[in-house]
Length: 183
Image: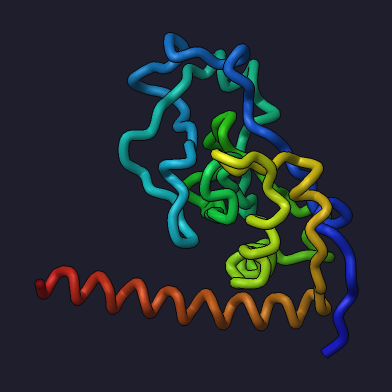
């Protein structure tokens, strides 16, 4: 299997969420578009409970912070090696200012699930933690995350690797749910 060496910034766009001056607590509404915060990032998928929401007008005003299927969302502060991928259910949601969004530039070059599994590797997590700045509260930014090196195989190999891992993760989640139900 041949790999090509590159950086995240060469294969994906990295975007910081809206800053506090763009979105205030009083902008949150009961019915509207959900906003993913760091607290909603989980294993692969995002938690859907207690999501803040914004109106359609605020979603339009802040449209560059909208999520699409296949994006990755990272914690920008604290647990900087933490990320989830955006599934079909979260397509059209938004992300908060304490998060970073990674979006593949060309879906014919990089497979989003491969990118997710790359970021779950212990070596990658260690790398991201080591490039974080700040002594008391580690943080990463678009520049730091864009400079993360990555080895990518052909698109077909990326899909084969990631889809296999995804099926295994689905089975693990199913077994955990059964065990939880039995308890």
